[in-house]
Structures are given as C-alpha cells and as structure tokens.
Length: 271
Image (cartoon, rainbow, N blue to C red; front, side, top):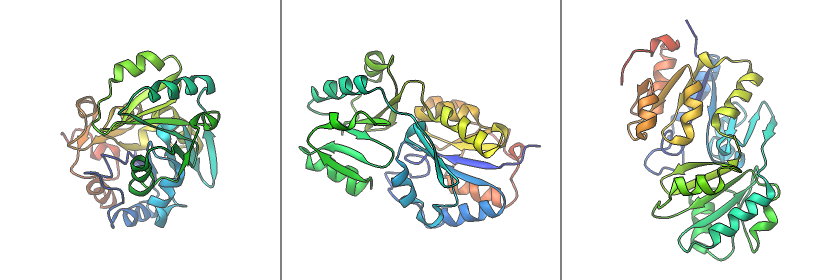
C-alpha cells in the first residue's frame, strides 16, 4: 500500500474554477489539516512565486511551490532552482509577437512580470485581476536576459499552438497556459521536470503522490503521479490519462482527511 505523502494541484481551471482568482475559504484549512496528517501540499502552476505566496497567504510557509510551469521552485525557505530562457531566442520571440495586433506579451522572472507600457487594459488584467506583481516598461528586451517564462495573451484564445511550437520548439517548451494564454519556458522544462527535482528534495517517491490537472501543461506531471485526477472541464488528453475525475479538488482533500489516504483507495474508483 502507498500512503499519500504529497498532493500537487494545478490552479487555473483546476483548483481555481470558472475564472476565480482567489481560493475558496475552506481550502487553506484543508491544507493545514493535511500537513498535520503528514501530507504536504504543492501548488503546481504557471504563476510566479510572488503571486502564489499571496494566494496561499495563510499557509505560505507550510507548503512547497512549483512555479512557472516548472521553470522555478521553492521549498523549505529557499529557491531550489530557476531555469532561465536563452536570451537571444527570447528577444527573437518578443520581436515576433510584436508583429501581431491582437496578442500581448508578458516577460517574467522569479517574482516580477514585465509588460509593455502601451496597453493599460493588459496591465490591469495582469496586475489587478490576476494579481501579479507587475511593472510596465518601455523595452521588454531589457528584461529578457534573466527571464524564466514568457507568456502570450490573446483575448479570443486564437493561438495556433503548432505554429509556435514549430517556430520556437527548438529553443523553448511551448504549452497552453489557459484558454487565453500560451506559456513559453526554457527548452525541456515542464512541470514534470520540476516535480522530479522537488520529490528528490522532499525524499518522496512518485508512487506516494496525487496530482490534479486540467490542461496539456499538466501532462508530464500527471504521468508521474501515483494518482492522477482531473476535473470535468479537463481537456480530452487529460481526461483520458486521469485515474479519477472529481467535481472539485476540495472534495478529494476532504476524503483523504477522512481516511482515504492510500493511493489504492482511489485506484479503480472509475471516472
């Protein structure tokens, strides 16, 4: 029997549903109770560390963090790693996006997002709605030398994923970051690569983990999990991979606290 020792959850579309930008009131209490039971919690997100700590403020020092789709991670009071993007390729990407009239670009390091000072509406979305620590700058190239992630935003979600992967796949990992976002990280970086490093640091085996996700940027980490769970809105590839489909993440957390704390308690439960 494999006892659950770590629970990782994607945020947007999974733990945060229907466009929500804050946690349900009960979530942090559940995370505290899980830790008392010896089960650690890991947000697995495309968001930055700064945003995640504010989102999980009541338990900010009691959890570990997988940030920026695996480009950075934090555990036990320290930054474990940051994976920087190739400077020259990042500049080429910025120039390519600037040719598009309907797409905005955000350049991020570990804690700050940089956006162009020419679009007030996009700054408002990133800073005030999503809650990122955001700076408006006149030249995004000035911040491409130490960036860990570049995100493209299109209000209508009109991204040709295959095009961007073909154009920049040799230099970067390109994945959907949500309905309106495309996330781009250093080559060969994904949530799974960061998850492996975090598990080694925590001395937890993949077989002792539960992972929640809903989109293609969750694919690698869910493949590693002892138990993979999605929500009803998960994309088809994730629904096929998942062992369980749940109504909400919190429903599963409560059940684990109530005694279903072995991976085998969930295997074969169906979808």
